[in-house]
Image (cartoon, rainbow, N blue to C red; front, side, top):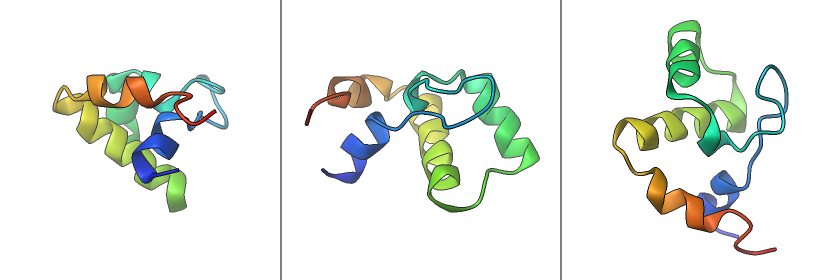
Amino acid sequence: MDDLTKLANTKMPYGKYKDNYLIDLPERYLVWYRTKGFPKGKLGEQLQLVLEIKINGLEYLIRPLINANK
């Protein structure tokens, strides 16, 4: 599974948006994380990437990858 497909199928592991796909997180929530500081590790990297995808209006490229290899 490539990195974008993994990103598309990753769900938020905790908090208010637990079990939501990262691509479905509200942009305001991701901006809040950017201000607060993204978590360390892979999740933080993925959240930063999702924010960039959303800011640039590229979500349409990720949504078709949800469950693509299942």
